[in-house]
Length: 567
Image (cartoon, rainbow, N blue to C red; front, side, top):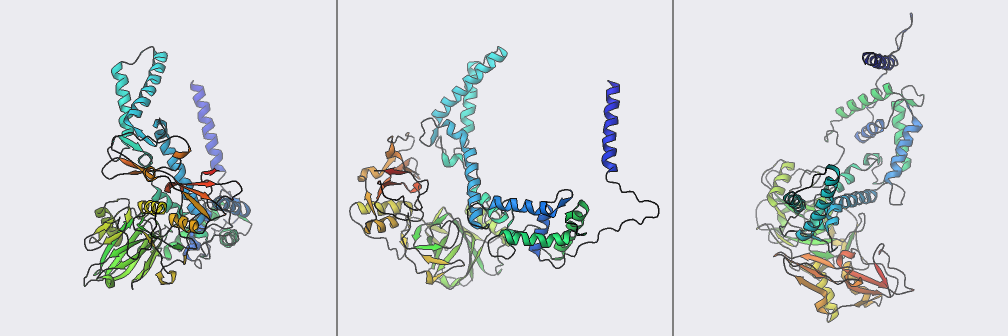
C-alpha cells in the first residue's frame, strides 16, 4: 500500500513538473530576453468595437488561428439566424425567446399534466389524491420487495397528503385546483424575453457594427478581421495566449478611458432623466382594452391596442412612464392633458393619439430593471429607485381601459371614446359580443398620420381579430356558422367540475375565470372559408375560432398549425 502511494505521488510530481516546464522558456548565454509584447493601440475603437473585441477574445483557445476564431463566430451567427431571412434581427431574437419560453413551460408543466387525469386543463384535489395513492402504492411495493419492510397505513396516507399539498402549493387563487396558468407561473417570460432581446443568443447585438438593426455575416467578418489585425501582434495569423492576454488588458484599459456608463453591461437600458420638480406617474399593463386598425413596424405584427389616460387639472408638469407588454396607443385626455410634457414607453412600443407631449421609447424592460413586483406600490417604488426618486405614483392592471391619474383608478370594461364597432343584428351581434368579451374597450379606427410614434405606423387593409372576420364575411370570403346563443357560453359555478362535450365540438373552447369564483366556457365560433384569405391579425385559437376549409379552397394564409376541419 505504501509503495502504491509513493508511485502515485511520484507520478503526480512528474505530471506537474512536465506541465510546469512546458511554460518555461530558456535563455541561452549571450541571448537577449524577448521584449514584452507592447499593448496594441485600442484608442481609436469606439465603445461597441471595444466590446466586440472582448467578446471575440472569449472565443480564443490556446493558440488559435484566425480562421478557427472567425469560424466560431460564423457558427454562432448561423445558430442565431433562425427565421430564414439573411441576417440576425429582433425577429430572430423574438423567435429564440419564444422557443426558450415554450421549452421552459413544457418542462415546468409536465408534472402538472401527469396529474390532470381527465384532460380538462384543471388538476383538482381529487385527482391529486388518486395520483398520490398510485405513486405511494408503487413506492410501497418497491420498498417491501427491497427491504421486506412494508409501510403502515398512516405512512401511506402521510405520503399521499404530502404529494397533494406539494402540488397545491401552485394554487394561487385558493380554489383547491391548479390551472395550466398556475402551473407555469414560475416561468418568467418577461425576464427571458428581456434577456434574449437585449443580450442576444450565441452572438451579442454589439456585432451590429453599422447600427442598422441587422447583423450580417459580412459586417461580422469585417469587424472580426479588423480586431484581429490589432490582436495578432506578430501578424502570423495565430493568436496565442500571451497576445490574447495583452489585448484583453488593452481593451479593458480602453473601456475604462471611455467611461462606460453601463459598467460593462452593453445593454442600452436607461430611463431618461426627468426634472425633479415634475410629477412622474407610471401605468403598467399587459395591453389596452380597445383594438385599433393600426400596425406597427415591429416583429411578428402584433395587434395594436389602445387605452385612455385622463389627466387631472394641476400646475405641475407631468411625465408618464408607460410599461406595456404589447404595442399600445395612448389617448391623453382630461382637463390637465397639457400638463403631460413627455411619455416614455418601456419594453413594448407606445404611441400617442393627439396631445402635445414628447414621446420616447426605450428597449428597457421592467424585468431587466429588476422590477417584478405587480402591486402599484411596488411598481412605483421600483421605478422610483431606477430614477432616484420616492414620490412616483402608479396604476397597475392586466388590461388598461380608461385610466384616471387623479384617482389612480382603471376602468377596464368601458367602451372607449370614438368607438366604431359596427351595429349588427341576429347572429352578427353574437360575434360583436364575443369580441367585446375579449376586448371590452371596443374598436378604434385611427389615422396613422395623426399618431405620434417612434416606429413606422400603417393602417391595416383588413381589421384584426373578429372585426376582420366580419369584413371578410361582408365580402363573401367567409361564412359564419353561429351556434345558438345558449351554446356560445356556459357558466360553471365555483367548486363544480368542468364538463365539456367530447369530440371536435370541444376544440377551441376558451375558459374564463370569474372574479367571484367559478368559470365560464366560450365555445368555438365556426367559420367556413370560401376563398383564399389572409387570416386577420391576432386571430389565434385562444380566441375560440374554428376554421372549416372545404375541399379545393386554399388554407388561409397565416393559419399555420391552426386546427382546420375539412368539409
